[in-house]
Amino acid sequence: MKIEKDRVVRFHYTVSEVGQEPIESSKDREPLAILIGHGNIIPGLETAMMDKEAGESFGVDVKSADAYGERREGLTQRVPKKHFGETRLVPGQQVILQTNFGPRAVTVEKVGMTVVDVDLNHPMAGKDLHFDVEIVEVREASEEEVQHGHVHGDGGHHH
Image (cartoon, rainbow, N blue to C red; front, side, top):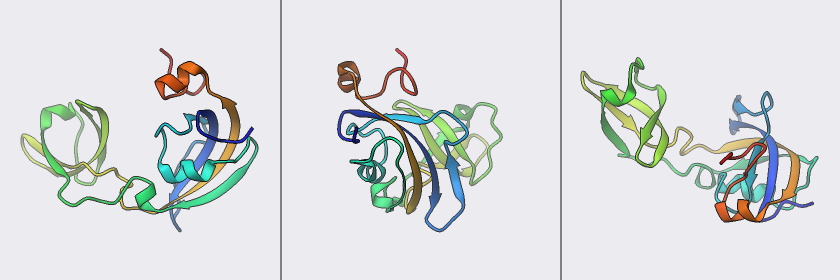
């Protein structure tokens, strides 16, 4: 079965900046499960997966514009220190900040007595990425998964 819109794909990946050492890999845990065509992964990787089948492995370079976007200057915010709990913060550190729109990865720029300046760009914004991908499984999505826009059950949401 080929990968196309409204199919569930389970896959392993290793990601690195182009020409650099790997940043992250799923090889030591369960494969990632996504519903194709619903914005659940970066566009460049989803496009590269189209028409692949279970058992296939491939590598692909994804330009920053098709990954986490270009870095946007001035995308900083001053946040009261209390929102970070007891975490000891240092400039350059990446932390997860709970926002009104859910958790967001931010990079600490400056730590003051009562406030913290954070960069809201995704940590991989502006970076061209290389992915090594192994397709583990491709299946039809259930009607409920398509309606909800994400995978249920194994590797997905449980609700």
